[in-house]
Image 1 (cartoon, one colour):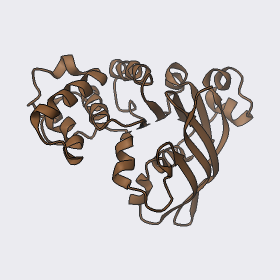
Image 2: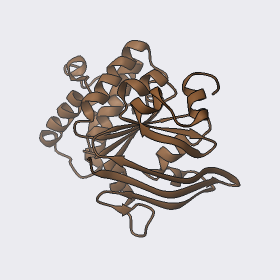
Image 3: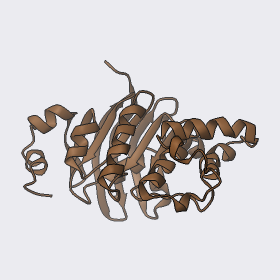
Image 4: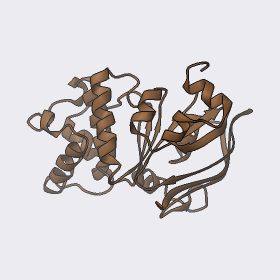
Amino acid sequence: MKENIIEIKDVQLHYGNHHALKSINLSVSKCEILAFIGPSGCGKSSLLRCINRMNDLIDGCRVRGKVVIEGFGDIYGKGIDINNLRKNVGMVFQKPNVFPMSIFDNIAFGPRTHGIKKKKDLDPIVEDSLKKAGIWQEVKDDLKKSAISLSGGQQQRICIARALAVQPKILLMDEPTSSLDPISTAIIEDLCENLKINYTIVIVTHNMQQATRISDKTAFFLNGEILEFGETTQIFSNPKNEKCEKYITGRFG
């Protein structure tokens, strides 16, 4: 049985008067892919952002409960170094958000922020991160080229490489392929399968086929609650919750 790296305990989240997450309890094992599924506005991305405290940046957002991450304890406890947390819990967003700078500087940005300044130290980090993100062969001769000039699928892999460059333990992905073509989507799905050897991945997706292809476990959200959580194969072949069954068979959502 795999060891848990994330424990979410009775998490409640409010945006102003809106109760967005209600008594969420969830555990995530090391080196697995967990998919969050459910209709829009049901709390998937809200919970994802709780795992690295991105919700701190939203005015009027209040979080109660505990999110316990290996090596940090409760990340909502006192004395948590938020920068170190986000170094260990990387995030890839729905739309590629490369920086308006070279490919090299995009990947080196995080390591530089954490004190690695010399090019001889940055070179192997950049190369290794681009290799892990499956894009090294495509860009190795153009590292001075602006990342903005790349295709959408390439930009998203640059964002993944940038997240990996600071050596996180956990990678959060918020619909990372929703704006990409099928070929780029397949490349990133294959990449996720390779990355889970060393990383824990939590992914929000509206693509049911994607969830079945790449995730080990799935959590189904509705109206700020998790109505079903378990092995992906079980949830998609024999869901226990009627609303989950209707959602994955396309009868609502």
